[in-house]
Amino acid sequence: MNTDTATGPVADTSADAAAGTPPTAAAHKRVAVVGGGIVGTMTAWQLAQRGHTVTVLDQWNTPNDRGASAGESRIFRTLYKEGPEYVAFIQRAGQKWKELEAAQDTQVLDWCGGLTIGRPDHPDVAAVLACAHELGLDHRVLNATAMREEFPAYGVDDDEIGVLDPNAGVFRPELAVLAARDEAIRLGATYRPYTEVLHVRPFPDRVMVHTAEGSDAFDSVVLATGPWAGALSGLGDGVIRPKQLVGSWFPVKDLSLHTPDRMPISVRRHPEGAFSAFPSLDGAGVKILNHHLEWPTIDQVDDLARFVAPDFVRSTEAAVARLMPHLDPTAVRVSTWTDGYTPDGAPIVGVGPVDDRIVLAVGMSGQGFKFSPMVGSVVADLVTTGSSSDALDIMDPARFTSGASS
Ligand SMILES: Cc1cc2nc3c(=O)[nH]c(=O)nc-3n(C[C@H](O)[C@H](O)[C@H](O)COP(=O)(O)OP(=O)(O)OC[C@H]3O[C@@H](n4cnc5c(N)ncnc54)[C@H](O)[C@@H]3O)c2cc1C
Image (tube, rainbow, N blue to C red; front, side, top):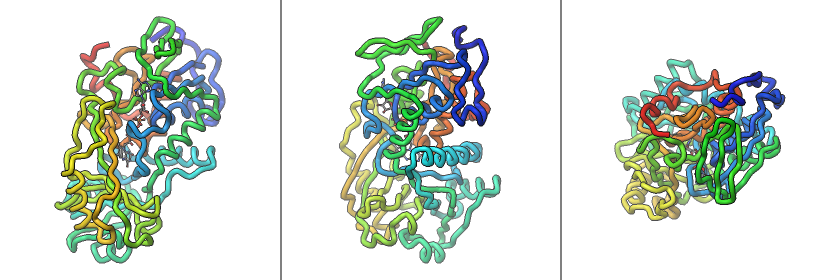
């Protein structure tokens, strides 16, 4: 690490720092955040809250629909099939979402609850139940009769159950990105849209960020470049694989059954259809995100085709016809986005392979929205003090960086 940034008093990352107490002059840093999706804007907010001078650069405007942080809705859930080791991180993220909403006087997350629906022996249903039991988390198990009565939007077979997570909800992702961006700006961050970062070069006393407009010196750089992370991160080939995700909207026949107060978000696991379902936010349709077919890996994010293979749409329509009895099973709108996936499906958050002052927050692997405020907080700790007690081992870049070139 560069001597200017390695020595001297370190800033307090505890409650005082979170409340906005500026770091000491020696610990104050100029930080560039490359990427203004949800991870970059949350990181900018957390860095600005710790008193650093923050510049966010994005090749597009923020939010944009080119990457991973757009598409009308996202899920927050606490009963986590991906593993109980995430749960405390997610719970703390939930508190930070509320803090952001209060600071910006807005609502971006509707705590409508969430269901995992399927046969009790399906691995994802079993994992959610195991997570609830192991950690003693609030939940309710509904049999098929209770499901039909309480949540009629969902068609269930007699041998299926629903596991209700009361600490789940639905985001408005574009509004969430705007809230994080605006809170960062309110705390002093600068925002530079339509500015592609071409290179990041470390020198003993600074890290240079090069764009078509020129070069600027920073003390630290955070790469929050989502599915584009292969380019600047120094991670080896194939560590970040961009995938194409597909969402479709289906018209509601009875809106009253599909509003967030009647229809929790769901993760559906059925032999004839695996998908996530989102309550109607536009008053006309329900969004279904297909998990039934393997999402295609794409070579170049900038070449993401807006075209979606017909099989994707047909299989989603078939699943809706079978499992969502009060929707018209015709996809009237289909959209596609990308996210960057790692080989083990866990994000990469920590110091990168190129230089200690270049921190990575990439490879969110389809999970990153809900816990983005905590990713931002860990990164802000790392920039401020070089370590974070909130960092999760499963997100440690070291698992991929041995042998990576700089
Ligand atoms: C369809 C879909 C559904 C999902 N559902 C959920 C969900 O329900 N719950 C959940 O928690 N997560 C979900 N996820 C995952 C979550 O949305 C993503 O993990 C998260 O949005 C990733 O955000 P990001 O900031 O890392 O990436 P992005 O939003 O892609 O942001 C990266 C930014 O970096 C910019 N950039 C890249 N390279 C450069 C450069 N060289 N110079 C300047 N700027 C650059 C890009 O323009 C972009 O704006 C979903 C993802 C998708 C795609």
